[in-house]
Length: 316
Image 1 (cartoon, one colour):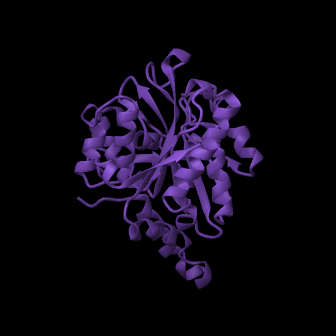
Image 2: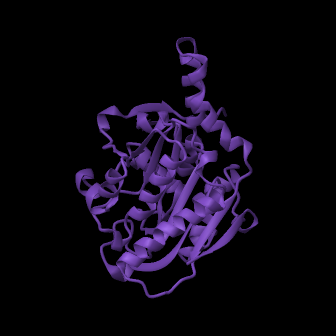
């Protein structure tokens, strides 16, 4: 069966525009996409090695350091961000919850990635998700929109009328509505948080791609196969898996500090299967308990043996 990915979309779009575009401007999207093919998958795990008792402001500073060191550990963002690129950062911003409740990606992690993208040469950095609750609330209560605006990133609310049905030629998902702005970005950085999910057991890198589509119930028919279809289509280049805080129960929305653990770690890499395999352990799960990981690995999307491609970095 022919497979279709976001990278194919970029390639076909660039080819279609070639006759109308000067040679100097052709292929920026292609270059960003091709970068992932020329590097072996690698991963860096940043772990806090400083004081264990931290107040809120100290946790915020730790999150920044962890993000910086994990990105540096995989060689920095300049290998992914071409000069003048449009970068879409895709956090989990699905729920009307504050950062302390670990329902959404840590805002300091997102803010650090925005800054690093601009430092690497990005012209535009956009932040957006298709949340389960009202976006006008989730974007603010998560702390992500205020942090992003301060750094000059564009906050995008995903208008459901703009989603475009794409034939992704998956095993179960044949067609699905995808937000065009995410498809057209030169680089998509996937930035989920590790947390419990009552239906899929966990939400991490693969499941975070549900925020680029509409018609979520399609995925619910079989998480393992459908998340593999969606991940293959998105053709991941780089992901950052946030475990500054994690939600251990009553996910994905949570609402109680009893379900939150302060882990002070995160990982960055080019292999979403490796990242999710690591994340499973952080959450206290085995990969066998998360069939979407083993299915993705069996389809060649990455390795479950994250230790073979990763290094640990102590941060203080």
